[in-house]
Image (cartoon, rainbow, N blue to C red; front, top):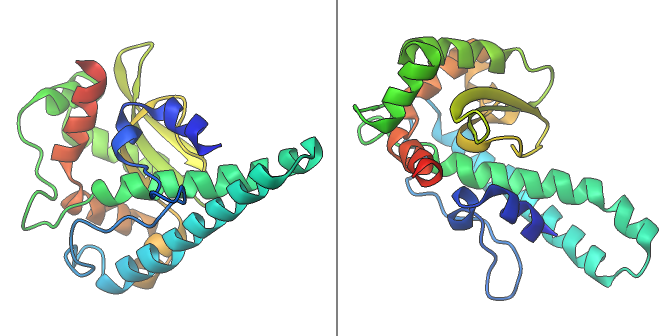
Length: 218
């Protein structure tokens, strides 16, 4: 079933979501240490977020897909759709999210002149105006969800979009995604979402984001 989701996200997710040789989905390794994003995101948060929360989505997705494959009942397969969407979305979103980040003493927070910066300035007026609008819209999410910078293939523009829960972004091609579930920030920032959102720009991997942008515009 997740192959359907993968097809919806190509080419960006073609290199993000991969199953093992056994056909089971696995937890991807992080491209940096758990404490590498400090002081902006604590090592404790990163370890729990990756090892516990993302692993739970992987386990749930494998279990749902196995149940779906074994079932001959249309009713049971329909009942499994919510589990496939929730856990599949959680796996897709987090796999993208980890690559979205980089240490501040490396690529994190650095947006150099190039196609992505030019597009942000074209569509939002300035990079700072984009960040302000993104933070405002993402902080306004009621409950849990994700804030996205997405590319609209119809308008050929970058747009800010939000999704609820673990719903993946399917209306746009995802360029940057920010997890606004409490497990992503509460241990460090408590309930102050704006502080977390302001801090995360210091560790956003704009080079990865530009690579995604270039894949869908060239």
